[in-house]
Image (cartoon, rainbow, N blue to C red):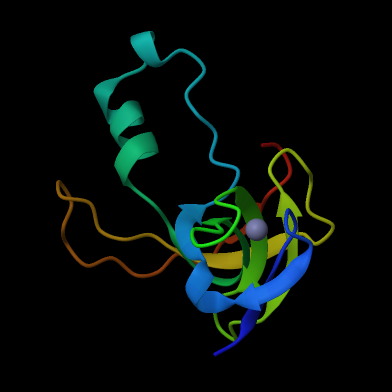
Length: 122
Ligand SMILES: [Zn+2]
């Protein structure tokens, strides 16, 4: 068991009080009514599988019930920082992103070797 610092409660609490809600800083399509079904589906359902440091959205479910972001290393489980929604992370995220096969192109594909700099704009 480990402890996570909630930036709203301003104290460390047991991990069991928290739930991960996916990647942070997802860009919503600017005009959902006029974007393609594919673009909207990508936004709603498809996520990358980063390996390394990246930003995640979490909720303090059995506590203040507020959402916040965590910068976490998915390899070592180390939490580098937590910060409130609307704040910018002090730590940049640099993770190798493994693109999962989509339904249409379910053929196995080699993992891309590109580095993705996540974070920044919310
Ligand atoms: Zn809290």
